[in-house]
Image (cartoon, rainbow over all chains, first blue to last red; front, side, top):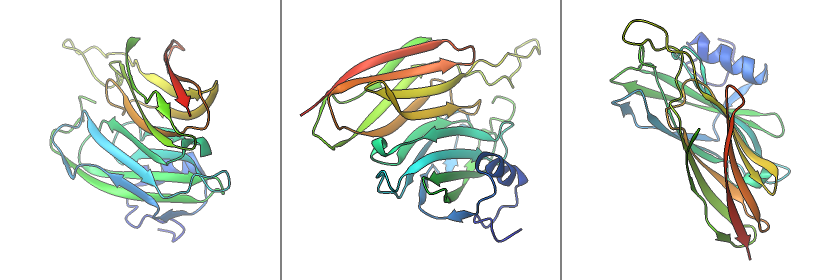
Length: 132
Length: 106
């Protein structure tokens, strides 16, 4: 794996390929992104995810885009958020479906084009494989 | 589309960052499920959520089939002036649903 890819265990090509298709070839660093998800989800239908990105959210320095990417879901991109300095705080929560135990990658794009990420492993007991 | 629930403060101080919550009742049918006779259940999802502050988009979410049914969002907004907040969902057929909320900044 090329060292330009920030997330260390990028064994999954789905995570890597999807991040590249959404954000291009710029290096993806690890950090500045905090993801809160339950370590074990009993139901893959509805898993809460809470994302916050370290940023002052000023006109000069703000988050423009956040993407949630799945390692195993049939459609890899789960959701994408577009923010602006008017957002004031780079903090978003929602509920997602997960087709089984996997890594979830969250990538944040800053207004200077830099990319930051966090990878979170989650165990899903009732996998939403067929039922997704 | 219907069944919208919004949690937005009515008042804020200038520069205050407020929390907004938005939920809409929608099956978000992924298109990967099959019915009892094995037939494919067609995809039926909301594609875009937008929050407009004084008629300009300040937050947008793009939804894909992996967003749960009855999509729920929490996000933030820096209140700078009194204006109308509009919460707008657009489904895959372009059908829009929206609800408005007045924000007073003083």
